[in-house]
Length: 77
Image 1 (cartoon, helix red, strand yellow):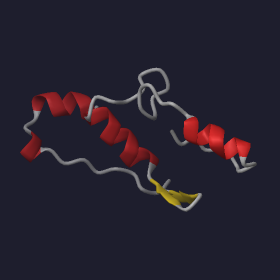
Image 2 (cartoon, rainbow, N blue to C red; image 1 turned 180 degrees about the horizontal axis):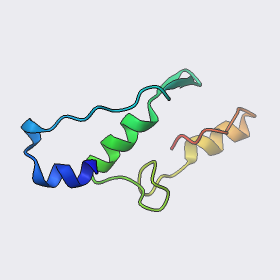
Image 3 (cartoon, one colour; image 1 turned 90 degrees about the horizontal axis):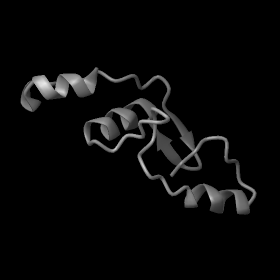
Image 4 (cartoon, helix red, strand yellow; image 1 turned 60 degrees about the horizontal axis):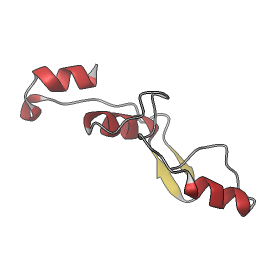
C-alpha cells in the first residue's frame, strides 16, 4: 500500500504511521522490522521473494556469527 501511495501522492504530502511495537534489541542493534521494510520498499530495494529485507543480501554477517557460535535466529544481512 505504501509503495502504491508513494506513486500517486506527492512526497511532501505523504506520511506513514509505522508499527514499532515489534522493535527489539539484538546483538546490541536496535531492530525496527516494519520501519526497515517500509524504508527498503520506498527505496526500491525490498526483497520481493521474502517480503522483508533487501534484494541481493549477502548474509556474510550471519555466516560470521554462526562461525562464532552466536545466535542466528534473526537474520541480519
